[in-house]
Amino acid sequence: MRIAIIGMGRAGTSFATALREVGHHVDTFHHDEIDRVSSAALVLLCVPDDALESVSNDLARGEYVVAHVAGSRGLRELAKHPRPAFLHPLAILSNADIGAERLLGARFSVGGDELVVEVVRSLGGSVLRLPDEQRTLYHATASVAANHVVALLGHVEVLAEAAGLSLRDFLPLAEQELSDVRAVGASRALTGPASRADMATIDAHLEAIPDSERSTYVAMANAAFEIAEQRRLASHA
Image (cartoon, rainbow, N blue to C red; front, side, top):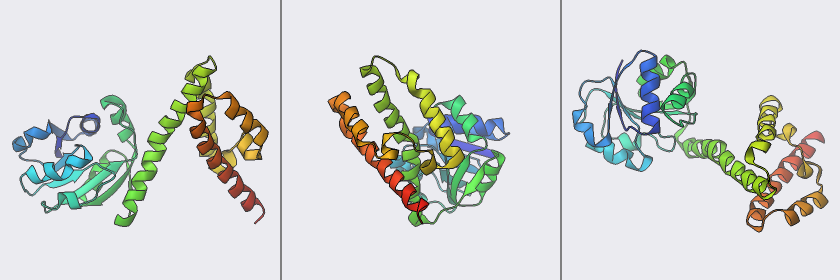
């Protein structure tokens, strides 16, 4: 399939690399080169979310499918075009090489023209379809899963350095916990003082950690308390 990609950031370069790897003919363009887009079965917009509508409107109408890869947007931004679509990967596209590897076999939220399903299948991916009213919550969940984990590890890094250690010293714990969540779910994987309502230990933690990190610690401890309470209620149901 001949595919034109507009946008050469991490998403655009990741898609270009992955799509070429599975045999598609891919041409790439910066967002200010859209007048050069000609014959293509699919024009894939890999531009910032807020720029989608303006870039879409600047793109000439054609018989091709126009799709974007933004999880927070639907088809409205592509309303000018007769064959709009979207395909959003549940994958972190760190750079072209890592992103391309993660796109192969990824799960994609799709909508609009069915050509994008063919593209997903060519990447070895699976398809997720959501009602329009669920897309914002879906994207919020994806953002928490990806970005908030990084924020949490940033919290760990500050605490580790305050203790004279490094984030690397504690990454095995995080990796083990993620493995347990994958195996048995978040509720059953929860351990630590909040899981057993050990307030004395939590109070000692709050005395020891830097002032700047206390609000984050309290927020996460409260979330852990809630998981522990739900687990307790479920065990008595």
